Length: 222
Image 1 (tube, rainbow, N blue to C red):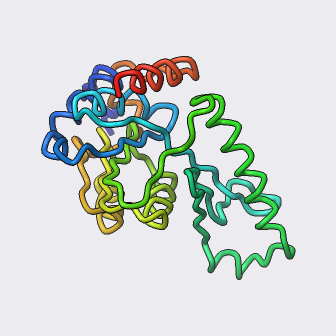
Image 2 (image 1 turned 135 degrees about the horizontal axis):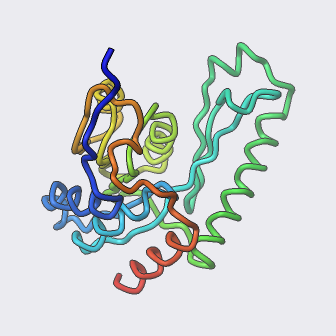
């Protein structure tokens, strides 16, 4: 069997964001809210917000893991002016965690979301989402678990129109997410997919400092 061979599709996250911005120009008249999943989604979302003359902010998601197995997600908490949470009811019924455990864990994760928003955004409050047109952005999708939780939280928050925009993702995951949104823009669905980072020439880790800088520049422009 020949080893997996590929040529990177994107130079880096910012260049991927520029290409996505081209594909999203039809949304500019609506002045959408661009929400990026940190950290890697922020350098993708920055050129989109700049080119669409839109506001850039974060959407922070924290998984709620099962007791004794944090990798098994029972739900997730999504921050915002009115934080939302999504739950895997079937899994909770099957595992039957102790009474009050889920509520306690949700409170703990909400505090962590508040800490992270303070770290990235200072005292600037989370944006109001109800009746807004929202573009959710990340640097790519692998399994889709975090993106799916974010989409469900945004729907619960009452957004008027929901667009998912990513540079690269597996075709099957894109097809599974299509019913969750009003529009889905994915620039590339290579096969075999293997991993998000392999489709970038530079996929070095985005630092907290870069996130803070880009959010500050976007806020000044807005």
